[in-house]
Image (tube, rainbow, N blue to C red; front, side):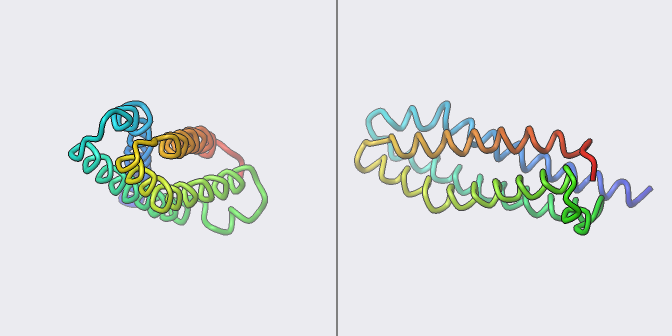
Length: 149
């Protein structure tokens, strides 16, 4: 009974962190970046940069919980067998690492540049790319639960 509870809690942490990550990108794309495109607002910029930091933490937590979940469920050896499940896990891990890198090294500086120059094109594009990648990852992960190893 206890091992099932622990696995459930790990899955819960993985899903919760992923939801925060996806929701944060949705907030960026649909609310914050369009609002930042208007005349500069230092408070909103600070909040937006802070949210980017939370997204980095949520993304890291999603990856860590996911790696623990793989270990607790099907195992790492299953990933390399070439089945559908392994392909999904590897694809999602690549997407997650790309999202972390893009958020920290590209989107955050683009937001700062947007506040200074008023040009929000790059930040808008990067936020949309991040949002679309999170949606793709969610679609893949919903399939992973039922995929053949």
